[in-house]
Image 1 (cartoon, rainbow, N blue to C red):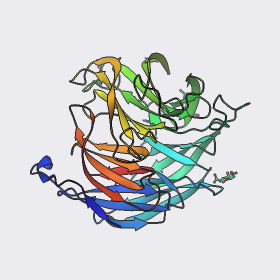
Image 2: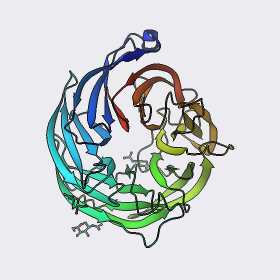
Image 3: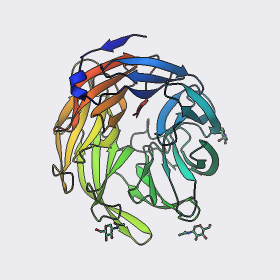
Image 4: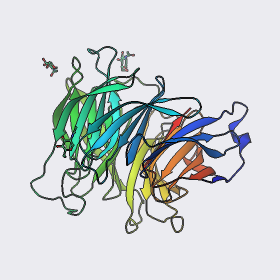
Length: 392
Ligand SMILES: *[C@@H]1O[C@H](CO)[C@@H](O)[C@H](O)[C@H]1NC(C)=O
Ligand SMILES: *[C@@H]1O[C@H](CO)[C@@H](O)[C@H](O)[C@H]1NC(C)=O
Ligand SMILES: *[C@@H]1O[C@H](CO)[C@@H](O)[C@H](O)[C@H]1NC(C)=O
């Protein structure tokens, strides 16, 4: 494995520069710990095969030094969830593993005030058309299966090839921690659950219906910077893979309920048509809280195998007041198929999981444009890379 130091950039980090770690999942059956040094070089610290045959998603519980890994179980009857203890030398030691319904691709945690010392984990299963939940001992990294919701469709959706069945693809917890949203790419809905505050169990409520054939994939909530979670100014942004669209919804809470009013819909290519074969993937609100960033896969916008990020404005420069969403432009993703990315707010960098390039790229985060800036380093790995997370 080769390390590419594209650009020596120690000055960018100032005096507080520290080596940091990243974890990358690979469909070659590997989870790799990478070191990103202050001289902007990426190098492999360690590798494990213990997540299973097709690691698809990583989630770090930093305070507890526990890494959650989903194994999609491609070509296998089941997937798995595994927890690892992280160590400062990059080693990952397995804590627990549980077999699941096939195709886990994203997870998120939440808690319930009535269940002290526990957390809960919700998992979206793409091929298994399901959502599962687990109660978690976050300190020990142990977990127990609680619920399974499996969905069916009477007939395929408008995009018959991709919408042959329900395909839960994302899990997003709302800013109050009382609701869990699951975008379903196959069914063109965002499934909505209320978290029972005394048991932590999910209770399905009215879904958010998306445009037919749009393929809801991932989402992100926006609240004004500095506000508490009961702010009236809450928005939900949804990325739709099949139509390459971003939709924005104003969120309203009433008693035990949550409702959504659409306020925006626009292409991740602005006024240009979507390039053939392109498919939007990940979404995040910028650390400055005023931009929405969406990764575009397989669009070759910046040349062969050079895909893009779409950037939208969504708030004033202070990040405190919502503005009408507007498309700003496209920025380089530094490779092919940026399926996932993680912005490191403290170190003003972004790590990109380039699935088809089979690499991880680290770029400077450009606060002003709310987009990736200069490429700092790239590391080729083995296999397709669906996910990368920082351990700062
Ligand atoms: C494993 O997959 C089978 C077949 O889809 C399913 O019936 C079973 O419930 C799965 N096992 C677990 C533990 O989820
Ligand atoms: C939460 O679950 C408990 C126990 O099943 C139930 O009695 C209660 O009604 C639920 N709360 C709500 C708000 O649904
Ligand atoms: C949160 O904000 C709302 C609206 O501004 C305010 O009424 C409430 O007291 C705040 N709650 C806390 C815990 O700060």
